[in-house]
Length: 85
Image (tube, rainbow, N blue to C red; front, side, top):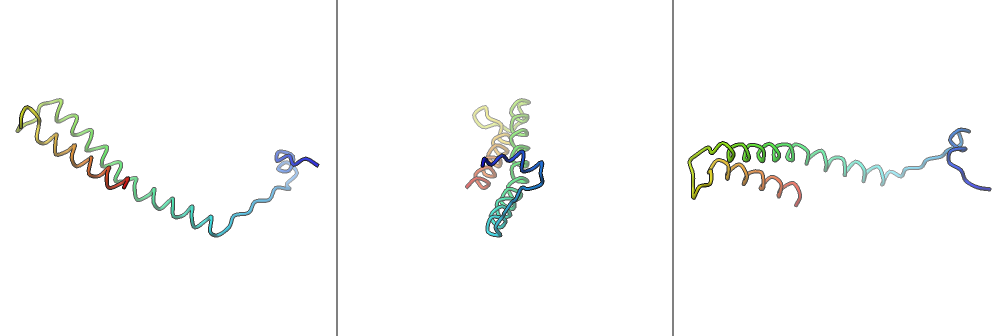
């Protein structure tokens, strides 16, 4: 006898089993991703700000590099490092 999931589903004979350990693991992974999301959004905002500050030559400058742009890029790099460590 072959096991055909489509036939089992159409006849209402499908069975699913999820252990509580599996649910706990899924919950841990979701919480981890939920903690990372705001940091990733803020880091992306800092990257966009750094690009805009560099494009519009916002000063003061150090060796032709915009200090606000460098600080914004540094903040985004720090956030990204903190998120994925």
